[in-house]
Image (cartoon, rainbow, N blue to C red; front, side, top):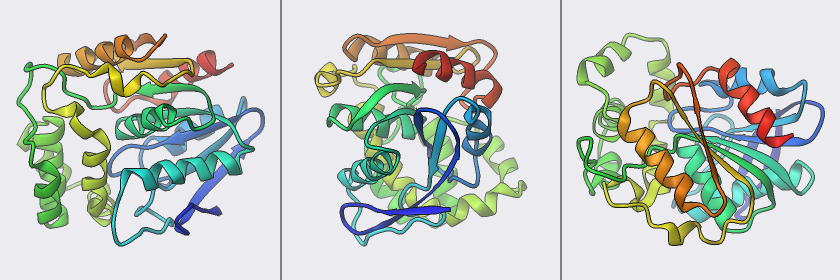
Amino acid sequence: MFTVASKDGTTIAYDRRGSGPALVLVDGALCSRAQGPLPELAEALADRFTVYNYDRRGRGDSGDAPEYAVERELEDLAAIIEAAGGSAYVYGTSSGAALALRAAAAGLPIEKLVAFEPPYVVDDSRRQIPRSWVADLQALEPGDAIKYFFTKGIGLPGIVVTMMRLMPAWKQMKAIAHTLPYDARMLGGNCFGDPMDAAQWASIEQPVLVVNGGKSPGWMKTSTRALAAAVPGARHAEVPGQNHVVRASAIAPVIADWCE
């Protein structure tokens, strides 16, 4: 494990493996560098890149601050990129893709970006996320916050979330459930069924590839295509046979082909 101090002094923990150009991985909600899909992805890419997989603030071995702000997470990513040599390729998944996109729009030294399924909602094809969901998540106990996030945020059936409570990962997710409002704020106004506002991405100059899984729900496919149309010069791709929990073996070649 390595650490770096973010601009506000918060310690951000990361792993580094492999050799080659720097590639930073940015995870989504309820994941850390030790749990979720990115540890396996880091291994899959380590033969082509020097891969940096970090704990977003409030998770794993990273610190936190009394008050959350999206800008602090941008500074955390900037600190990781600086530790990686001053510029890097970036792959973000789910809310981590939203973070990476905000970072690119803010001018961070990202060479190329792959954004996998930021969970935006840009039409009325699914049940709408409550506009009060940040406050709602903040008011709930960890287990209830997880259920709220998956049902009202992601749109999973309640029975699926009930079954998830029996999985070993549930305890791990509860430990970082306090960061769910962070993810909700990272998505901003892009998740309430309103059309995608291209102005927020107008400053992005880096090559961006927006990706969705072939088995992902229709509303998510619609939002990724809307995002690709809104980001200047972006391209869109679909990974056959995959959903929001994309397999490392399926997404690794997509990342490598885009970044090399």
